[in-house]
Structures are given as structure tokens and as C-alpha cells.
Image (tube, one colour):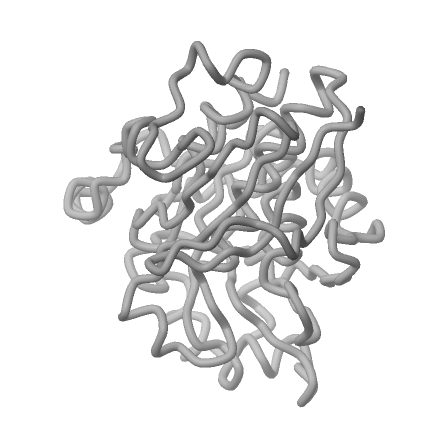
Length: 280
């Protein structure tokens, strides 16, 4: 499967089959987890697979139905040390893993929240200098979604995405970037548009400077997510879209690099995060 097909296939799975993951598939997934993961800004998150049996029966019963998750037995847990652009690197690396899980026929769902203490923190022996921004159930999707999941997807607008003119811009934020103007980058940008995000806020805004062949990535922050402290889920979201962008361009053979551009344009309603520039 090509990257775009995998991105389109992935969805936030909340209802899982009771069937165990086949040994061959599980071994391949664990091999992926055990490799070294390094984001474009040098942060190195670690990932572990936690089985529900790692918890007490009381905790397991609660975690197996975490939020609106049904029949979850395995959880992908990611840990990272705090630092500059740590959340972006975390989202970047974890989304690569999630897309590989999708290619293996597994279902996943990003779950963000406060996991610094509690069952998951104890299960991974979380240290004081480490952050645990998200957890993700892993398993085969159930053939039928639960009624609760259908209601949640409808309420959150999970299948709705912002239009190009709302998130992609050319040279300034008054000029929408059209798909025609995007040229060879159209597919990579469309794969950004399809990315998951906390509460489906889609907080990213991308500004294309065609003269210098550079894309500037910004966040339009929501007030509610500013209150979450050191773990910024919207920065994780940006890491996810950076991953979609990079993976698509790599597959197409388009080379470039990530950087923090001190001369990036400023926009008072947005936070500049990073840029991607094509190789000359």
C-alpha cells in the first residue's frame, strides 16, 4: 500500500474485535516499536505495548473501555523527555507507527489527556523527566461499530475536514493556496488535510512561499488546549501532519529538510512552529 492509501484507510477505531492479534502480525509490530525513533528535531520518543493484564482487575475493567473504547486489550504508550519541539517529534514518530499498524490491518485511536500519573504511568515506570502525552488502543477493528462510537463520530465531526482555503495559504494569509498552485505538493498537502487531531480541531495552518520553495507550519491554538500545561496536544497534532507531509514527499522522491526559520512570517493569531524547505 502506498502512503496515501494508508492515510485514507486509517480511522479512529473505538470498537475492537475480541480476536487476538495474530502472532506474525504482533511480532512485526513489536519489531517496529523496538526500532530507534527520532523526530526531525532530534527528540527520541520511546514506545511500549501494554497488555490489559498488566493492570489490576479493577483497573483493567476500566481501561478496557477507556472513554468510549470497547474491547481494547493492547495499548500503545509513547514516552518522551521534555524539550524544544518534543511534542512535534512525538506526534511525528507515533503517527508513523500508527500508519504502519494500519498497513498491518490493525485499528488505532489517538487518546490524549493527562497520563502523568495513574495506571499507564505506573505500567511504564514513568520517570520525573518524562512525559506521556497519549495512549492508543491497538487491535483488529470490530466489523460493526458500537452505537456509542457512531454517536461520538457524529458529535465530533470525525469524518469532516476543513476546506483547502481554510488551512493552506500562498505567500500571505489573505491568499488561499489552490490545488493547482500547489503543483507537485498537492497530494502531500491533501494528506495533511486528512490528518487526525484532538477534538478534530485541525489547528494547523500552512503558508507556502513559492519563491523560496518553503512551507511554514503554524498552529491556531484553542483556548481549552492552552490549559493542559506542559503536554500540548495541538503540538502533537502538528507533528502528525508533518509526518503525513514528509512520508508522502519521501515516497514521491521529493527531497527537503525541516528547520526553524527565524525569518518566518508572523501572524498574531497563529504560533509559528517550523518550516519545510525543498532541496535546491
